Length: 294
Length: 294
Image (cartoon, rainbow over all chains, first blue to last red; front, side, top):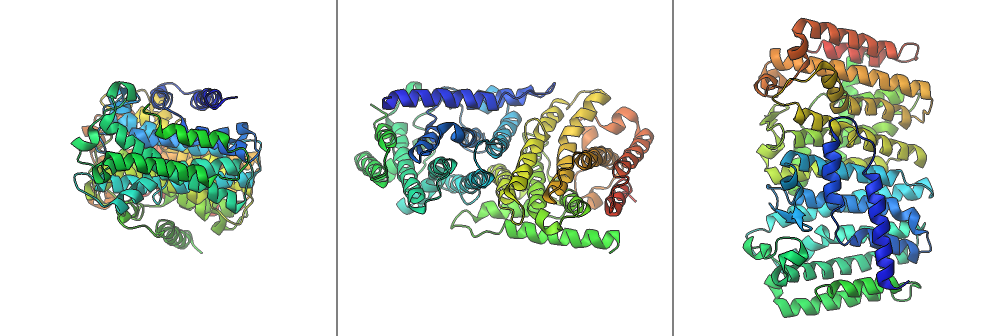
């Protein structure tokens, strides 16, 4: 299979699994919450995190199917974070993945609860994983908790809120993004390995390094697109960072230096997997991300 | 130890453990989120749910210490649900446990994130439980996910939001409360047994029955207190249900019938544990709850 065939097949499987996990029978009167959760979780998107979970599972010799609960759990966590991030009291965004944000399509209370529901469903889904030993499942649940938690992604959100309307240093921005975006990407890499039963410290470190570098490259590219992109093709509001006076990589470094930095980080992500057999897909994935504007 | 001595000792241990779980070292600039989480989690309260976890663990012959991670996880989930429930877009409450609600003491964005953080920390804490086998830990994580999720407590919140400013039937109110309050109380009972290694279906069913009846009795008592209580001793806004035109048990049944129903449910909770050795503490606990206004 070529890279893009594999990508397409994985995304299709992930979306089918996500739809199934979120389609449990509901009681009378509260199906609205499942509708809201599915509205946001099944609205397209690149599925980058779950694709990485499956890819690292294969890289470590595991069957990708066994990693699917963790892949979907991670995507649920990513989706919940977007729903809450878009709320009026947070980034106050109207558009996400080309459609009205959850609180616009439903209402604010439903959006808060749909986010809560997806976060809870993520852990329930992960803990119900079949076909691998209970210790490995628990390790995966702990990875999710650690990387999504108050010393992980949520810390990044807190720093992000504190960085509005003021200039922060490049170091501070690096830390912010390493938490806000990096944590879930590192989690994706580690979850894939762990689902395959891998406990080798060097492989796990290489995987996390890949996730770290890829996360930063991805975020820089995202900042560039916020300036250069077009709301219609991106499916979200652009030019918002400048309007919110957010400290971004282009604001601190300029566009040209950003492009060079994204390229360098992509190279470092690829280099982290040097010597690991079967790294072809993940190498192409990294390279495709910084080229995604083309 | 008498009932109240045991209660006091358990509450002290639970609060010490909670404080420890929420006191992990934090990085520069985002300790605010831990402050907010601790502000709400360590603000007192009856600690009913974690006390029940420990009590059922003892009833099933387990060491209460081993159930502590699940007891604290459940209290974190309860606390997060209060923080989000108090938000302006939900119940819009200013006072909780005698202090300004989280979004009043901090701000709305921090309150959303502190709730998210507590929910995530709950699963992380549960999945890190030591001293019992991985299968039992996973069962506990799944109980938490199921009872706190979109077919559990969150469904109750959704029904609750839909029940504002209109009269609902007694059946609808029973379902609402069975989900909104009952799920976490049933979870408490089941978690305690499971942490003790109990997998006996009859014991687990009796435990869940106790939680179900206790939850309803407790909620009815809460509704009564909302009418009769005093904001100063209760530590929260009273008379709010009537102002919000919420359908409550007293509104549907009248105060006298409510008192009788709470008594009957308390009796049924106690009866559910008939014949289980060591049920003394839980029997007294049930009886103390409906008498808590005295």
